[in-house]
Amino acid sequence: GYSRLYHDEKKGKYVKDVKVEFEKAGKVTLFVLEDYAGGRRYTVLNGNCSVKPLTGDFNRELCVKQSDYKGRAVLGLNDDLLPMDLYAVNYSNPDYDIYGEAVVLPISEGRCMRQTEMINARVKSKLVAVESAVVFNTTTSISDPSIFDIPKECKGNLHLKKVPPFNLNLHAIKIRL
Image (tube, rainbow, N blue to C red):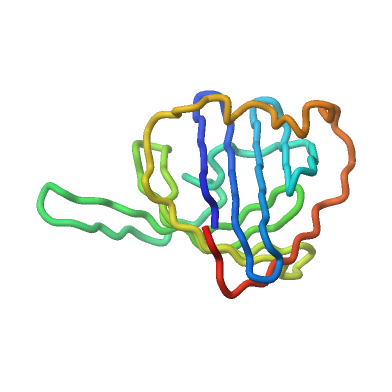
């Protein structure tokens, strides 16, 4: 699971900060900074950095243009309601084709906050990963804006270069967060 997700709408940046331990693979750390304004994706897997070009829609995982709206569920009673929209997710990034479903909370027109996702990642139609994530303890402010800085492992790696994709195959029964 993800330990933290960060989303800076004003600067067009998105961060996944993952720290997990798998029964067989051991500890894994993954930090991904998607800088849509700067056009780069910085990926640090267990201390190794990869920098790749990044294009596409910043809100692609939230209020996704590529997604198909499937319906709305409303939880709660009377004035205390929580609407949640279900989307079929279908998008690509430089490494994977992503398919699945996402439950998002609409904030305002064209703005959403992801609550849950269940996705499959494929490379050339071959299934390479399955992911389920639940977002909780969400805040509307960024307590530490330095989370969006270029990772220190990538500081000397600022020029774009062709880096082989990380090949991480994890199979686990127990996940410890």
